[in-house]
Image (tube, rainbow, N blue to C red):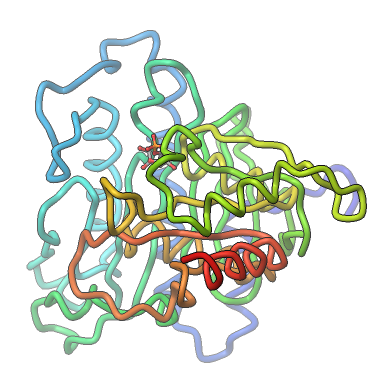
Length: 337
Ligand code: P6P
C-alpha cells in the first residue's frame, strides 16, 4: 500500500465481509452505523470546552453516578443511530436501568443486540482527559420478529460476534474485532473518515507497565498487594521495576497497554467486593479485543469471557493485558488470595 492509499472503515468492513460468501451484510451495516455515531460523538467531545455541553446534566444515571451532558448526548446518538440501522432489536447501556427495546417492525427483525458504555471515563471530560465508548454485539437468542428478552443480553463474552471501542484522545480511534483479529482506524477530520491505521493489533506477551488505582491499595486482596510489590522490585532480567501508568479512563489505559504491553487491574476491594467495572459492556468487549491480540483477560479465577452473566449491570474484578503478566498476577492470587 503506498502512502496515498487510504482504506476507510466502510471500505474495510466490506472487504472483510467479502471473505464470507454467505454473509448478508447485516453486521457490516451495523458497524457502519457505529462509525457514524462515533463521528457525531467525536464532534461534540472535541468541542465540549466551547459549548454548554460540559458539566453535569443535573441528574444521575442508574449507577447513581452524576450524568454529564456528554454522557447523555453520546447515549442518545448511539441509540438513534443503531435504531435507524434496523439491524439491532434492542440495546443495553450503562446509562439505562433496563435494556431499550426497539419494537417497530423493522427493528423487531434485527438479528443483533448491542451493549455499550456510551462514554466511559466521563468524569474526565471536564479536565480534557481521553474518554471512550465501549461496545459489544451479540446475535439475539430470541426469534427474529419477536420482542427481545433479557436472555438476549445475558450471554457469555465468548458469544460476542463483534466488540470494540472508540478512544477520543489526542486523535480519535475506533478499534474493533469480529473475531478475525483487531483493526484500528484513526479519524481523519479533514475528510471525516475513519482510516485504517493499525492492522492486526497484537499485544506483547511481556510488558513493563502496570495500571491500577494504588489509592485503593489497603483494600486490595493480598495477592494483588504482592503483585504490586513484584512490579516495583528491581530485577533487570525481567525488566523490573515496571512503570505505573493509570489514567483512570478504561479505554485509554487499555489502549496504551494493548499497543505497548502491560496489565490493567481493577480488582475486588473491601468496599467493592465484586469490583467496579461492568462485565457485559466494559470487560467482555475489552477482553474480546485483548484475546484477539494474544493477551489474556480474567476475573481472577476464570477467563472473563466464560463468566455466565446473571444481570445487566453486574460488576466484576478485571485483570487484562499481556499474557505473561496476567499469568504472573494469577500466580500471586493463587498463593496469597
Ligand atoms: P477509579 C471510569 O469511571 C471507570 O469506569 C473506568 O473508565 C476506569 O478504568 C475506572 O472507572 C476508574 O475507577 O476508581 O480508579 O477512579
